[in-house]
Length: 498
Image (tube, rainbow, N blue to C red; front, top):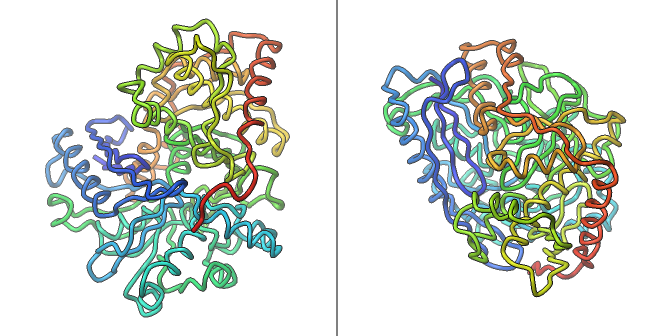
């Protein structure tokens, strides 16, 4: 068996897969989200690790996996989130700053005003946005007592979540290019930390950053005293969206997918060379590195999709569980003009507006919780359409089919509506946890248990939703969405950054 650790934004999922990619054990737990100020999002690293380790143990137990039966471990993770810890003990030195956190917005504005975005865009394929890790690391260095000195002399190290989990499992301070390429500090052309970017983002000491190794290969051996007696290779690491691309068997240029999780992320395999010019509204990123060969992807990042459903549950208390939204949405014949723009942490692709705020429009006295539930699901689909259209414009290739995975794909109403407004079939993966499947496949190839050809033949669909509406109705639905979107856009200066 292969253990896949999928450390996500709101919880950790662990799955055991056999070599045919069939799940044979799983477990999941959420952990606390901390919002100390408006637009700030943090995680307690100690709790994150405690939950991750517990879930791994529960998944191993669920699969009946005895010592000797586990062959390899793969790790996939929420990207951009910044962790800092003591390398001698593993003790966190500050709360993790989550990818959704917007405290770096003013710093990005400052750098943009200095004309530095062209450099960042050319080296990293990214844009100046607080979504990425660079301004988060800079903020920690400037606001955590003694941290800069500790980072300089080796008493503090940084990493994305994969790096922290790998360290706790193996004692190695490592990452892979798919995660490194999300930091604003990594040159995706030369495949290394970039000295000029390290200086730009607050003089980050390179010694405090992890060693970048190929996504498939040796990252260390799990410590038996940590992983319930299992001492096996950690042989695959990739950021969650790249892992899902791999798990969806999108190994050739032009193939793409959307993962519906806390956020939603449309990725398209872009070949073995980064785009010569980063496309408007999109990101260029490393998909994975296998040996000396690096593959790249175009990406549209949508910040809040599943998190909006979670907000209905935890913030407003109008649903008890996410599954209720399907029944509520289906109870209405239409949206009655009610729209929800879930810009709860700004807007990502293709708008890139960190100052946008969540907005609900079209409410009347007859509006109820069914309207809010439907508007939330519709917003997930509408945002995906905007992202896909930007990607089609950049690649000059119309989308013929959308491969879909992630937790929200169990909502058949949402997937059917997605096909309607996108105008192409939506193929829902048989294994909804394709991110974890991708991590398992990366680890399986890295440990020599399966081949790359096996991965290429691995896509299986649970259901394919065909569009049911015409172009005129589709255009009308999108026009209503874009009207609400306009109202959600805000002027700079509305988010506290102190």
